[in-house]
Image (cartoon, rainbow, N blue to C red; front, top):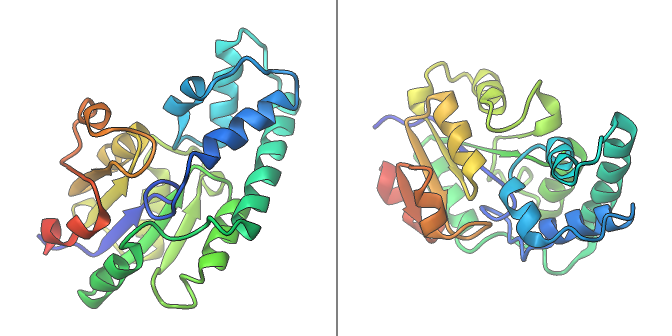
Length: 225
């Protein structure tokens, strides 16, 4: 298998989550009076572009979420996440992540990140962990940099264009959610690999038929080398 680009999700896949994303989601909604939303309501939306996820929650509540309301809730979410990723001592790479990045780079495989977060949050994470300065990643793209986020393939396709990769069969996608899996499928990736370190269990991920399910990123190299 000739792989030239590996595309990783961020929260729950390469960066420890601790359910912070779901908590920030709930807090943002509660700040606007929507206090009956639970983690079970937002869990299926992990991985989506966050403004889309907010719209989906409001629809479920029977609320006609206009652009201004969605934007206001999203701004609250962004502020919460920016504060967390910039200052919290809990922010750290998922176990074995940096070592796996190095192994891929040593084999000539480019490493990229993509995310349902907006670019401002993604930039804070990458800057905090200094992954570009350390030469561990080649690229990063956020959901607000393309026309539509996951499960559409546009983030992966843009990363391919920016990194000189023409064939999706030279790309692998790794993530912890249903929409990560569907994004990889829609992009035509050679392998779509799910990890159990984030939002969903192995049993839940199996329902969406990834090529492989792993419990730790250290299991990834054996699947492609």
